[in-house]
Amino acid sequence: MPLPPPCPLCPFTAASLAGLKATVLLLLVLLIKSRIQIRFFSALGVLLLVLQTLTVLAVGGLAGAALLAALASGWIGQRSAAA
Image (cartoon, rainbow, N blue to C red; front, side, top):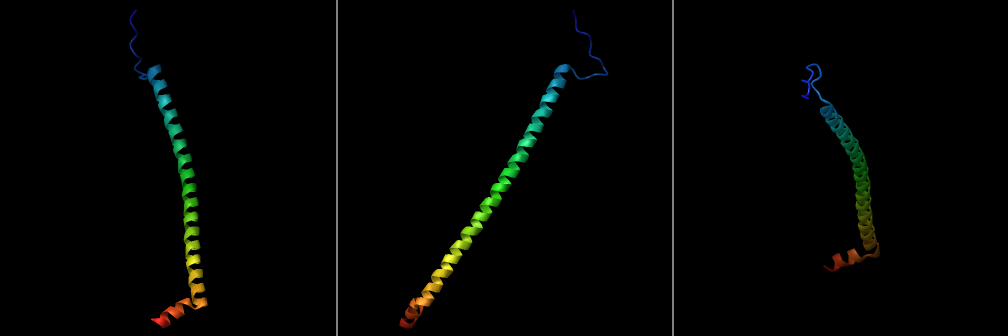
């Protein structure tokens, strides 16, 4: 028995409709996944920026404290006087 000709008012078959639904569902899942990843990595980037800033401030504070300690002990003044 031959298949009836496709209806001109319904150009989509059941298989093509199922394929379109699966494609839309896949794209929605990928969109949600990418939004979650953007938010996660954005939070991770902020955390790393804070960690980097605190590290720079700590190193700068230690260098400043070492300079003040050297000035207070007279070590820098003695070396420049000896030169």
